[in-house]
Image (cartoon, rainbow, N blue to C red):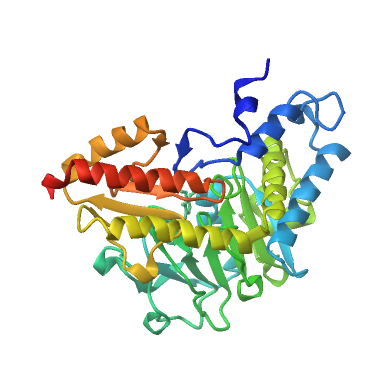
Amino acid sequence: MALPFLAEAGSTPRIFNFASGPGVMPAAVLAQAQRELFDWNGSGLSMLELPFTGEDFKSVMWRAQDSLRALLAVPDNYRILFMHGGASAQFSLLPLNLLGGAERADYLETGYWSRRAVTEARRYCAVNIAASTGGTDFDRMPVQEELHLDPGAAYCHYTSNETANGVQFHRVPDSGAVPLVADMTSDFLSRPLDIARYGMIYASSQKNIGPAGFTVVIVREDLLGRAHPATPTLFDYRMQAEAGSLLNTPVTFAIYLAGLVFQWLAERGGVAAMECRSLARSAQLYRAIDASVGFYRCPVQPAHRSRMNVCFMLADSALTPLFLSGAARHGLVNLKGHSMLGGVRASLYNAMPDEGVSALTAFMRKFAEEHAHHV
Ligand code: PMP
């Protein structure tokens, strides 16, 4: 008898997971992992059992890194690292690795996650808030003219997509000669990138990469070798680059799954195709919000709205729990907004089937009709 999941894989799933992370995984990838769980590549061993120093796991690691390099057209003078500790660890590892004797860094303060990055960076250096949109509750990203950049900064950090606030940069800020660093945790692999504009990019794996467990760091080679002497060896970018991210036992199963996701992405047209899909799907959802004549409201200015994390409120916030429980009964799960901000958040990562967005907008229309008297 077919296992229940295998029977469902490839067909339209009935549950649509809008979680902000760990987020939805491609059904085809889960089905392949299920098939290979007991016997990877005819080895008779599970992927979970492969030693990380052996040729089998190394081939999985190199393939994952090569696929990622190809997906994003990463130039040869950039190194791809798979690091431990999540994106939160990078909030500290970035200053530890890139200050290189400098005492100042620029940060753009644009929401919950960039604030977290700033708080951590202040433990290591003087932070210049080059721009902040906190005055209007992070309802947009700053424009280039608003940036007050410090030419003596070691780097300039920004968060390309604010996962909690639902606000996203749709252009790359210009930091001049100062290396630009981006936390791309929640919009990585959702659109093509011109990597050459960055000194470094980082993204933890539990959104568009899929499995939780590691953080991708893409760093320009000339920025390696500046780590503060007290940086743990394991978290020194140069040491990890030299060791091929194998300084100690990596999260082997997560890296294997990520490799399958990269392959899945490439087969579906890569990041350019993902950008088209995310544009269409987020537009569909924002149209449903804006067409509700005030029943739903997105606090983010239209030109700055996130295509990955669509955040909205109900005009009558007392209805939010009812909306969330009703949605869950329709198979639309994990729509609760960030704990600090409330409301509703629909994360539209690459693996979200288009049908999920149509099902959500249909539910939103029905719910608004049924509760219209509350507006
Ligand atoms: N930055 C952003 C933009 C995020 O969305 C998150 C997680 N939601 C983080 C950093 C922290 O990631 P982690 O939990 O992997 O430390």
